[in-house]
Length: 263
Image (cartoon, rainbow, N blue to C red; front, side):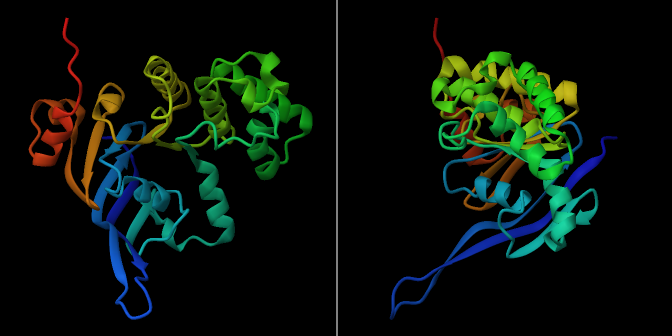
């Protein structure tokens, strides 16, 4: 039986929106009492349209935002109650690959500095050892060592996303949250990046939480899929079962939106 990394219980995130001086504030239920677990070494995908709550869920798991209610247990410990040092240790173990490879990289920094920054901030490694680690990670994501001193604008979208992946790997995390990591890339590049992520998962024994609006993207990489709709989970199944036997009407709608290639 697989070890449970995350156990999410009745997780809620509500936002209060002020509507004006004489109007009652509006409550947006972005995440409305969801529960699920994440098994060690799996790819759990969270899928749904914009506004369904999937990215908010990711922010809660990353502790970028605090929940309104509920628990997020990481190996049995509630991360919503972590204090400064414990939180710092947690954030080393859980990293993120951002959606937009253009805006998530500092344009003034060279590749070596971008990938090496987490090591500089979180370890006592020497400059020499940091460079050695960065070059190792660059090789793992398919980047040439000569690119170490180049700037982000000198790369394509797919190459920039490889920089982001290398940065996420820098601290040897256990979990990587992939927030729509291929949605900004050309379709021809998407498969390359997805295959790279799967290769890295096997090599580094990673657990992925993969956020996407597109079931066709996650079909070949997921072990299980969570389908969200307006802050709620409407379906959670093994990938084969979800595609062959969807129960929720919303899941059927998402599946019907996948383009069919005709010969």
